[in-house]
Image (cartoon, rainbow, N blue to C red):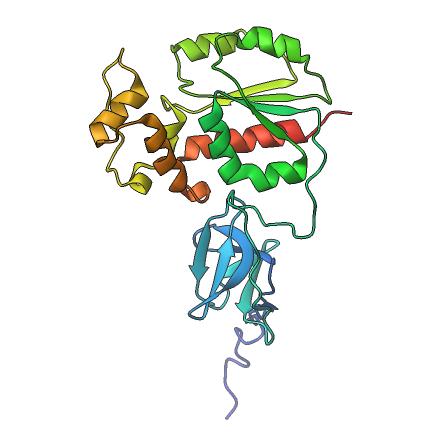
Length: 270
């Protein structure tokens, strides 16, 4: 018997869901995890999960759940390619992808200044490879008391930029007042809040729970050495520098400041 109500009125109105496209997770493919918003490039595989690395070098693993990723705003399902290149990319100490076969450039006119030889050594340990490729020289100062005069003598310009990394650059400090006197569009002064570059190294890397608190008015390095039982600052510095192998061993404010300086001095105005 014919259905008195005729055809199912919903039958014609049902829409088939569009199939979610599957995409091979090739190395360097940039996708976003739909749940967390983490965006990064495919850098490998671990236990069946895809490994994504964001632009800061942070890595996270994500399972290959259907429809779990966005590619250019479109929901996709990632799948492991049939053939995967297992050759791992070499990463510099700063977290950048190493460029093999590229020689260091001849030094450019632009410079990065740091407060002393310890600062220069630490910067070299982490960012040396990047700076050599860019042709940027790091020069240590003997403190920043005469910073304004030294900047003027350098004669910065659109193609001769200057970046300066300052220790203990916090509001109300002597350093902040010195920096305020430097006003030049071709000079960027950044800094970190630590009393000395030593303190920018994560304390656990040198076997400390935290850096010792040294009373004001007392030489900070000597106070640290006494507190941790090291005779000479030179011995303590060797211990500190030996503990640093990459950007992961130093505090974020130093990383951010150095990345800003490198970007500033390597992008030259026409």
